[in-house]
Length: 191
Image (cartoon, rainbow, N blue to C red; front, side, top):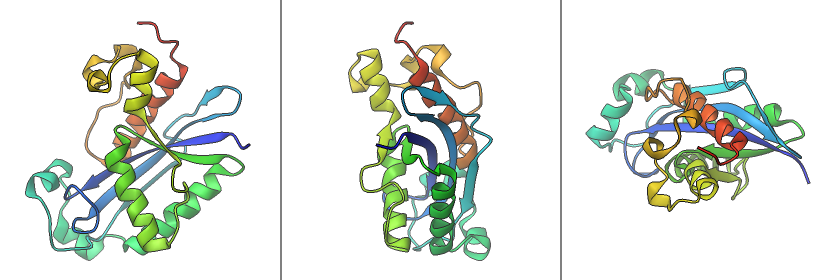
């Protein structure tokens, strides 16, 4: 059984689901590895970021506003999704080496949905398999012994949070989230 390498991934999209809407950017940062014990990584040491061409004309203005990305500019200058997803798969595979790549996000349901859909649609396979996903929100709920509804960042002990700002830039947020994940993986459960 291979040890795990955790890839913190964040997505900025222009709507709630992939297909009708587009993933406009995504970032990834290595949060750490786990064999017998968790080993934290410096999340800025191994990163990936791409801005993508939209795949449809549909978008939700409020969703687009969150990221601050310009759809018209992305139509001209964004990376073709097939290219971005192939590059991402190669980067994950090369970075993970002998480790099993595991996708982590908070909450994973949104980010995983987009990345998995794009990987299958544009490359035919997911470098994370069909289930190599770990939800940071659920992990916190289990470690803290709280219901999922109370597993919010506001309710978490301050020492678990990253000192980095949440900017809604996908790479910044992937790095920030990697800190949170590493802190949670190293946490003994005390306040």
